Amino acid sequence: MSGINPFEVAKQQIDACAKIINLPPNVTTMLKTPMRELHVSLPVKMDDGSVKVFQGFRVQYNDARGPAKGGIRFHPDETIDTVRALSSWMTWKTALLDLPLGGGKGGVICNPKELSNSELERLSRAYIRAIYQFVGPERDVPAPDVYTTPQIMAWMMDEYSAIAGKTQFGVITGKPLALGGSPGRGDATARGGMITIREAANAFGIDLSKATVAIQGYGNAGYHAARLCKELFGSKIIAVCDSKGGVCCKCDDDTGIDPGTAYEYKNTSGSVCNLPGMLEISGDELLELEVDILIPAAVENCITDKNAGKIKAKIVAELSNGPTTPEADDILYKNGVHIIPDFLCNAGGVTVSYFEMVQNFYMHTWTEDEVREKLDNKMTAAYHSVLETSKEYKINMRQAAYVRAVERVVEAMKLRGWI
Image (tube, rainbow, N blue to C red; front, side, top):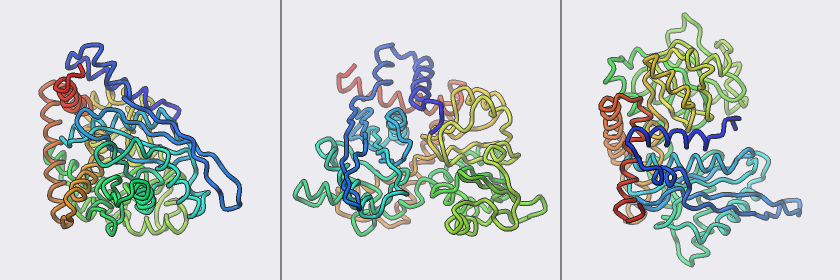
């Protein structure tokens, strides 16, 4: 994780919003404080017979608008402050998309790459046993996140159901289709981001069929972003990178990087580095390329006051959480770079997770086309709501997104008599 504390960044962003809409200090303090935190120890029997104790967290940041919603991360560098920050951003994300949900997040400090399949299952079940009393379809609904998968969600759902004594598909989203998952969930985060890019390009007169794109991070979200940029718009992918480095196409290459070829190469070799026919480039260099669209799809705080002035992209579409620091936001805004902030750009995932919850409650399944149409409507409305707020207040897009989201959360808190 980055040396910058993500929760301090999240609190700075709330402070900035509070000044814009003149929130009372006591309300601002409430919005900067998680409502509930659970710290758990998870003893797991390993394959060699030893017992290892893992540390886990679940944060329910604010549930004024509905049950908490947010993913579970399995990561060796997980921290409680990262989970707090992500649960905060989930609160604003669900509010911005006008979903009847609050914000939450979970995490376990572990390295899934060092665990066998059976150890991973035992850890997943241990986590649910530890947090069982605090989650549920009408209380807090987890989902997959970094290094967690539909299979892990299936184990967690099964463990919760075993304790409850009845099948509870609705306790978890991001499940396999055979266990109540939703069509369209696999690429929902990237697809939602593409919808906001499409609307931004229309608003600012950018022809996406001729646009150039650089993508920082080439996991699930980054790959789907590259694929959809190519499929939906005909854009040219000129650079991609992962944690080990990156590649860019040559100047005389008219077609750019093929998303599928790059993804296959990464899965085979472990990195996009040395992709045949491409030039080597660092992740830092990728951020500063002269492109129409830059898509950060990896780690927090990669765009800071140190490199923001060198960003040449016309649109920065934040598919990852927290890639830009508050200081960098100011620099980019002054330089005329249009940012689609993270909790707008990457809200497609939680939106389709909400659709999955609705389908589970109804014991019904929508078609993939129906899910995509509903997602398009939600993302389009949210983007234009933020753009209009940005123009009305003469503030940057992130501040505008916060204004819209925080206003909705505060309204719910007032109506419930909390403030």
